Every structure is written in structure tokens, then in C-alpha cells.
Length: 186
Image 1 (cartoon, rainbow, N blue to C red):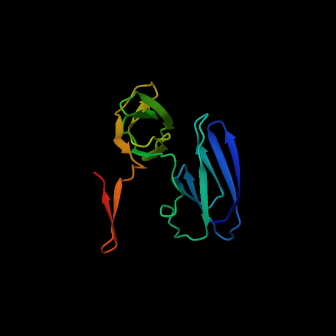
Image 2: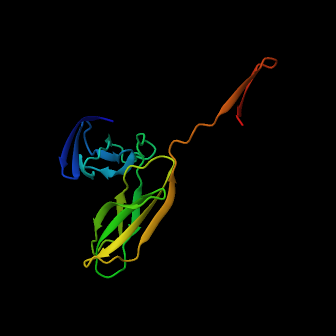
Image 3: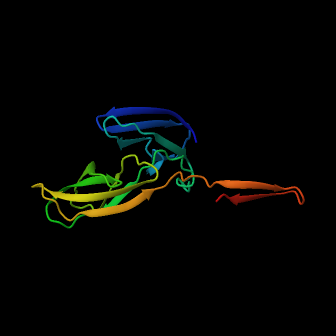
């Protein structure tokens, strides 16, 4: 990969990242936010939504190979994020969607607000940073112009497991046949 420089331009909650590549011809830029694949562009800049006071790692891989596999070649993901995807509400007069998150058995917290577009069939949002070995549930709440809630869609619960504990192994050496045996400790 041949990214030679990054230019980061924060604008309130939107951050625009521009990169320069030493590759020539048609260049495909594969974008990642904290290791989560966000998509490919042929443009060398992309905007990301970052909450005020939050930091995120934006990485981009550039290639001239149109068959490049961005998932198999993804950078290490840290911390975890989840792409939330839902189908539009059929409720009348939907103005926007509230995306809310519940960590473990805690209270619901607002993650983002997504505007409803009349000809769009599905929507997506990226979660906040997620803690490993923790249960999360998300809900999508359609809200009409008067502030009334529609039919809520729920995603989860889901346990985030990214770095499970390594198994505890015992190692024994048998000098007779000179073999080493690995076994899981009790």
C-alpha cells in the first residue's frame, strides 16, 4: 500500500480525511474506522461522523487491484464497533430514527439520529466503541414530525467477544520417546 500522507479536517462532528497515494491509474481506497470496514471509493477523501470529544482511528488501504479483498486484508480492529443496519419504517410521517444502545442491563442511551429519506429503503449507523465481553442491545426508534414514536426495531442482545482468554495449557515432556504433549489444564 502506498499512502504517503493524511490530511484530517474536523468540522463539528464530521471529520474529513484526505490521503495522497503514490499509485497511479485507477486507485481504490478502502476505508476503515477503528478497524471496521466502511467501504471503498475511488476518491481520495471521505467524511466520518465522530462524536464531540471522541477519538477514532481512520485507516485507508490503497490499491490498483479491483479484486482486492478488504476483509481478508483488514487492519487489526480496536476498539470494536458494530455496523447497525435496519429497514425503513412503514409508519406514516416518519421524520427521523433514534438509534439507542443499552450496555449490559443499563439504561438506553442515544447513539445517533438518522434523518428519514422518503425514497430510501434501508439505513445504517455505526455504534459507539464497544467493550469486549459485554452484552449490548440496540433499538431503532422511528419518530414522526410531532415527536411520536413508531414501531421499535431491536438488534441484539449480542455479546461482544473479540479477545477471549487464551486456554490454559499444560506441557509435559516424555524423555523415553522424546515427545512433548500439550493438554488443556483443568
